[in-house]
Amino acid sequence: MQYKEICFDAMEVVKKAAAFIRERHENRNELVFEEKGRQNFVTEVDLIAEQILVSGLSEVLPAAGFITEEGTSTLRGESFNWVIDPIDGTTNFIHGVFPFAISVGLAKEDEVVAGIIYEFGLDEYFYAWKEGGAWLNGLPIQVSKVATVGQSLIATGFPYTNFTYLEEFMQSMDHFMKHSHGLRRLGSAATDIAYVACGRFDGFYEYGLHPWDIAAGIVLVQEAGGKVSDFSGHEDPLHKETFLSSNHHIFNEFLNSVQKIMLPK
Image (tube, rainbow, N blue to C red):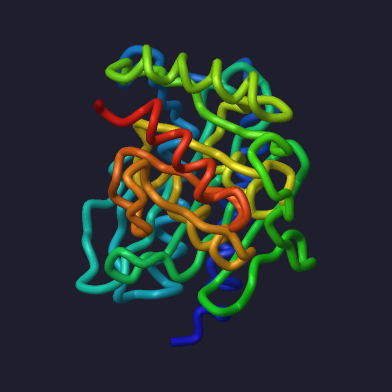
């Protein structure tokens, strides 16, 4: 299967959804949104954008099914599934704050073979396909080359619905604030992972994520020369609730630090 061709065809669909989202963002005063749960929002823009993506991607690869955040399609493919987040960072979107992003990954069983993340604030298309490298607006990207966590800029995401591990998470923030170049939280996991892929961040970790948050980012980081896993070290984290990514040099040190703090004793 020609994953490069599929990736570029999918990007044209993403561009259509992005044009719609951008127009609605510029007219945000008319925005209607609901709470799916505490601090967990969905707007009419999420729903319509997801429908645009589902409709267009159905033509790109008719045999594929869908795993979508907003549930506009429940069709599952026998082998391939598009994993879609129409707006990753909806709270940022509602408040007019960047970043927020579209995230689209194509999974073959549990392996992500193509992915696209479009971040609106800097107008950046990150994309990758299996054995094709990782790209940003037409230029190749790679993860950073820093050798230690102490030299690294680390990103994370704050829990907003699942506070099960809040105490451990606070301890992890304390650790990385004291033992790295700093800790950042942008409010869009897809963007965080894309920034690991292009070397802006050296590592990212978060718990309570979903497949649509990380699918595209998984293949981006892998094709950019980095590594991904869940907090237990399993390198197939698509359907796990924890996620970690970094360059190869710091991966073991980074993972060990997260495990010591975040995993049950």
